[in-house]
Length: 74
Image (cartoon, rainbow, N blue to C red):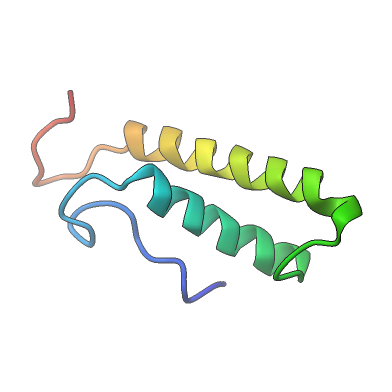
């Protein structure tokens, strides 16, 4: 869908993804889906909320994944 969003889990990313990396991926996703690089002032709040919600979902996803061949998180 959006080629600039990189994989944020091992082994593609050997260390744990940072909050900044997750937010950047969420921002790219929201930009792609909305069709706006930067929203108009009247859409800023909903745009920012979507980015925050997707970044949170990304964190929950990464925290819940079990990747074979890597040490358990904990």
